[in-house]
Image 1 (cartoon, rainbow, N blue to C red):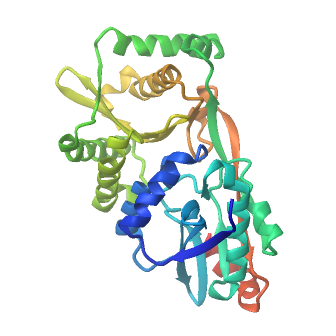
Image 2: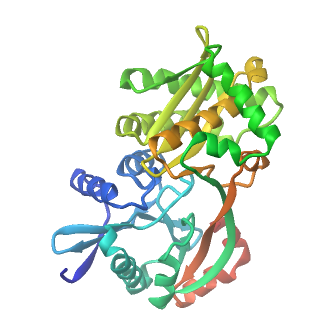
Image 3: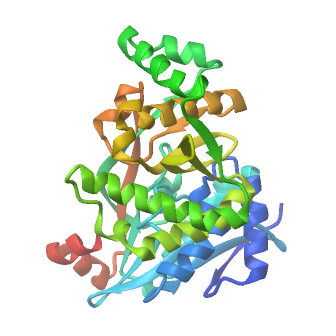
Length: 352
């Protein structure tokens, strides 16, 4: 292995995306949120006002590491943030497995070397046991720990019966009863894989989700109700469904679509992202059916984890999920501007 060098990219080119895809496929710790498809769509849809700050680590000419970041101004301060941190649940340095330790150290040193270009570094949405914070500290960056975030997940056993057996009797019976609606044909599950069908399926997904929340008298996050959010996820689905990183499911009762779920997946984990169902089909327990079927199919395909993603909503623990904790840190360079940015409480509140 030669000496690693770090290059900062100020634009996302087709050549970089191609290398990114190869590195993503090699990294066993990568999630769909760090895929080049997610990055490309997010940058085109959500990157306005930001400057790319993508650190590429090369061993000779081979890309062995990548830290997708952006730099934004918040008031007078220059803030480096993880790529897509507003809509992605995980962020981590991508690395070739044998090079991970060296890659993370090289990136941390380069960020420290470029301390004059930024004032605050937001290091967040890290997977549990990430080595990145320790590498930042070792490079001489000052870290201020933030509250950890719960990421409830189920470590999947070898069979669906074993999973059901881990639940209390009442919950096990409930899921078996719900799944009969699917197994006996009252409901059918359609997976949308045809590119031409994806746009209309996302339109239905968005409408069903909005209607469900409205029928409950609850408000979705403002962005989630918008056409902008629908269009973002339409492009995400078009990019990731053909690669097997996004699963777009519709539940039908006869000819009617009564539930729609958009989730992410890879060989290791299923990531429960967003979905909804029609209020008049609520008695069927479509939400529980969707979760149970996703767990059943994930076990069958050899995935090791069902990940509910960020948030401690009580329903996640009903299925037997246990918390995994995601760390977050504010990194400072030690320069006066960096210290001032963190010292100003009101400014810091906006940065978070």
